[in-house]
Length: 287
Image (tube, rainbow, N blue to C red; front, side, top):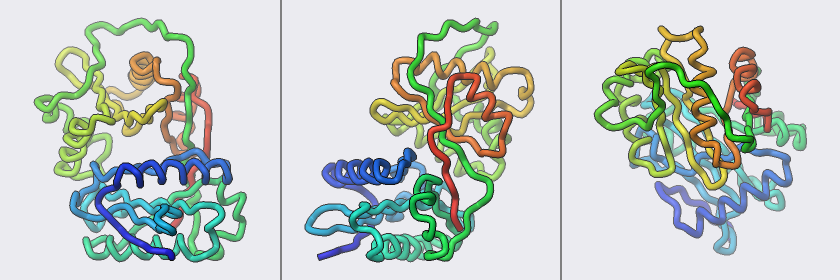
């Protein structure tokens, strides 16, 4: 008996089963990117964000929604189905369940992400579902733990976790770096980082001036760096390299550091490569 449900939260057992399901998919497909199993950063906290396909009381398929901006902004979905349960329409039903939910909350535009390794294994997949791959791919890069870095410190600089009373100082440079986000959604995002014990938000300061920042998702033996940026007024002066190296130093006891970069962003790719990151998987967005 196959049942479908969509929810705002996961039980501990469901979280464990989904983790095992994703690991099995990665092993079969050769993938490496995990979906974000939380709704901390979704614009509507009350919106169901995880759809499950359940057979014999076990999770055999999962779809997640990531919608950190209010409508009409585009949302993002990911779908995973156990290899032995594929080609039975499970993925399609999970997607339809997510789409129905998104429409109820005013969203009409979404995209899916998958990995090049999966598409290479399933060459007929895109034609079968009628979606098109975005030509601007993303690369997930990984840096295994290396010898502890010894780095020169620039005068009067410090990298430290963001505090609530510092949010007003960081908001303007974050907004300048990511102008597609509203001030309200940015504030909500930063507050979400502070409230989630699995997330850090590190800010690089020179005196009282914030120069740049990065959010870090902590997950077991891995830390995922995202939203890394330098204030537009400070770009082109080596601060991006400095911030990245300080982050590597701060988290040098974690076995793996990961981040994502657009394949077309050769400058950032070179920056990360120089810091010891290597391409782990290629992420494809479908619409």
